[in-house]
Length: 247
Ligand SMILES: C[S@@+](CC[C@H](N)C(=O)[O-])C[C@H]1O[C@@H](n2cnc3c(N)ncnc32)[C@H](O)[C@@H]1O
Image (cartoon, rainbow, N blue to C red; front, side):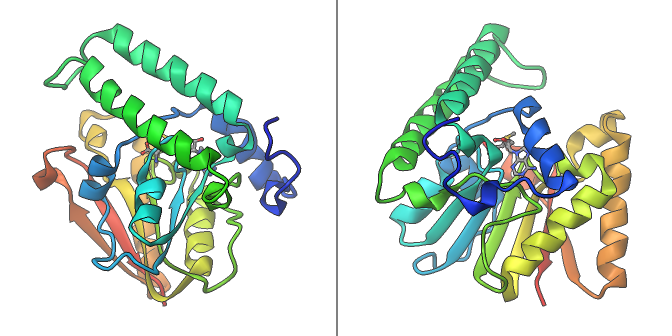
């Protein structure tokens, strides 16, 4: 356990659903997407200063550090924040493994290039995580138990977490969406990327695909406004994103 152990109420593993997420998180990829990529995929509010923004499954991305520098009251949530040394170890192993691959399938450049960008983003993240002025903006918690009050945030997003891992179980997916909606103020937005992942077209992850479709039906049933937006014009992915407006 790192320096945050036993310090934050969000680490309470008091439900089987939460405990299962703490247990399974180490098996997920510890990526560190740079701000430029995150900003191209997530439709942040045009005015960031003063906005309370939560990144669910923030990993080693430097998006929260960048949002803080822009004046947003941003928070990263990730069970991996429980131990900084373990996070550094996992990220280093992930970077080394991907550099060793040489070139990823469907990629146009050697894997060393995107990994170099992720290394730089991780350094930026690590400086912010360890800085006592911003450390409280990184919370060790899971998606279904966010450490924020009801109606307290303006914008919640999740990049490669809720609709990459939690959508493998429909109840978990809905629980994560309900929890994000709980912490959002009326009119706030929840953004989930990827949605209708481009790997679905190749026949991968049929369960995720079914669960995402069920989520859309559920949104309609409960009268929530959800829009699926195509991300292919970004040139970064052929997937889409789901934007849900909180009531
Ligand atoms: C693929 S990474 C994405 C990281 C970052 N969003 C990015 O785009 O680089 C997935 C992250 O989700 C975190 N994670 C896994 N299960 C989670 C859960 N139940 N709640 C919150 N975060 C979770 C992992 O620890 C990991 O850092």
